[in-house]
Image (cartoon, rainbow, N blue to C red; front, side, top):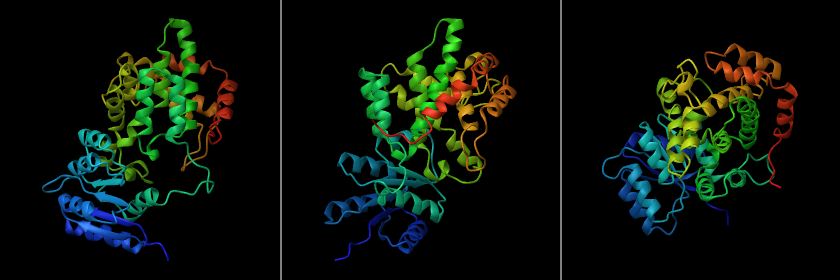
Length: 351
């Protein structure tokens, strides 16, 4: 007997939106159940012998909101993945959605390809061995246990393993920038005699943790972001900070994560800090993160050479980067960067 296609519940109080989402999904072969109120969806799920495989829910609705709906599902120990879809998104909303276990987010208006990509990822994960798999949260957990094995280490691994898989930066990128940051920090510490080594290492590893709270179709948009999308993207340092500050003794790490997009001349975000106002570890990190971006392949250009990256870093000293940190960074022999790139260039396989 052929297996029925997955069933998706659509919860939105706007009839046109429900109709649009249903048409997109049915056209792609899914079955749909639609609800104009969250309370109706909850009642249906409680009495149904066949709960949906996935839920798409708006956030701002009359009566019960999408976040209240998510909390009700969470409290009922419901394991159905929920994708929140809304034109409304701010920091408190992102933090509450994460706390209640949202699986994904889409910003309205969502294009058909955005909808189908998000749904397909949760309902049709790739078969083992069908492609090179990106690193998972378990890989991050192993690294974090090595970094911080005490109480905060357990809380960190709990945090990371609770995050949606798609959100965390690739492990090899995080490992490279961590090694670059420590390499640079060792030169600076040799002159100043102090460095927050564990904060530096964990902050580099988790610098983009806050992207867990950014909608999928903003994170993966192929073209330039519009002003509202850019506003939402710029929430990710604050989201990462708030997630980390909930863990004891993570204030230093949280500050690195919060500050990693600040520029030396005050033109960065989210606070527009400048020079010494910016956490020193974050100033180091911004240099090595840019270096890794320049020396890695991008959809719009191939990876640049280490020499070309060094020249670009030199050019941005005093504007994007701290000149004193750039000076120490440029003293590092190129071969040391090449060694790190060779070690952390292949897909990660746990040993």
